[in-house]
Image 1 (cartoon, rainbow, N blue to C red):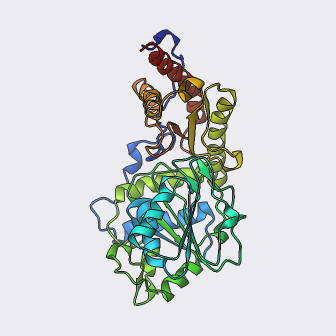
Image 2 (spheres, one colour; image 1 turned 135 degrees about the vertical axis):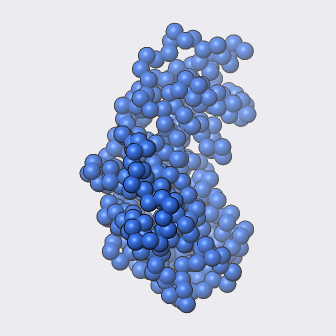
Image 3 (cartoon, rainbow, N blue to C red; image 1 turned 135 degrees about the horizontal axis):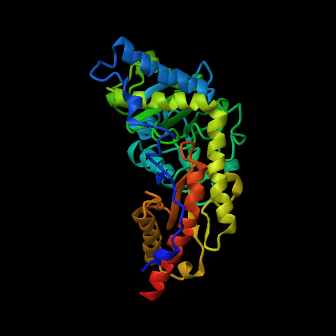
Length: 391
């Protein structure tokens, strides 16, 4: 049993460290929804203006070029990325980068659902990146910017050439608003509201470069296109999608909530401030890991460690002596104990990842809460280890 007398005295003010949906911004309350356009058609003047404001505020805060289209689409980041793949892939050969579960999910969809034959998969185990120098940019390229389930991200956009022939398609759902995105290197970018800004689920964002628009208007995929994926009409881009007319009905409550998050982002200093908050949060964990006798980053290379979805593995000799099943059980027990104590919710490693912990450190999390959490990680580990050794 755990020794209650050794529990840390300080607790996080908020125990919300889930990697999605993520914590609300500091000071959030239900009052921010008071002006929501509920009970209205989303195509009426006021609700549509709010949808357009989400688009333009996102453009302003993220520094997205004026000639890039931005749309609000259904089914979160997954829906946005599926829409892009089903609408644009197949015109060229394809390189897919995969180093964690979501990248592997795109591999599965492309090879088993779209069944594209001219496909190369460049993969790597959890904790590492594929060889970025091996990517062939005469082909289309699909990749995640930040591997949410592995804690591994691409270091920058320098590996992407300016004179590429294919399109670069980037799933950026746990990177947008927390990392610097080189828009001139990216042709398709997607994310969801519930990640870095702590919004509500089911709405995705789709960004298209002029090169992506040209692909849509010059190429027709050979497969049937579900209505929910259709981005063109009569061979031309459906511009209404990128002016606030969503493909299906959005939640105006979620829209109001996201507008509040965007306002907060601007009020604290925009993208530089959001990045600085994520970096400061990550630094709290990094300092703790550097002094830890039992935990390490899953990401092996410091240059490719995520500053949002921070994945930790357990390196203690006791833990490494366990079977794979017992390791998974022990890691789960640590996360469960933190949950029961009310100090950290939803911090277990992703089900397909190596056993360990995953702690969200995005901009809506307070560094003071992470600092308060770190001693609890030590306490929970020692408690689980002691329970196991005395069982």
